[in-house]
Image (cartoon, rainbow, N blue to C red; front, side, top):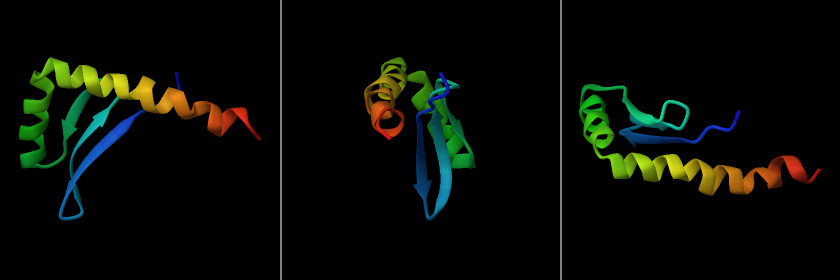
Length: 69
């Protein structure tokens, strides 16, 4: 439950938007990023894919980090 999947979008070294698996949605950090986040949050299939990335990517690899010393 403490595992978090984050996908950040950058432009000119500035983070414009981020998907956070704990929130389950995109958050914008700039004016353009807020518009993009609102657009992506309306697409329920894309949000579902991003939520599934936590299970696919993070939980699959957790044994590598914690399982083998």
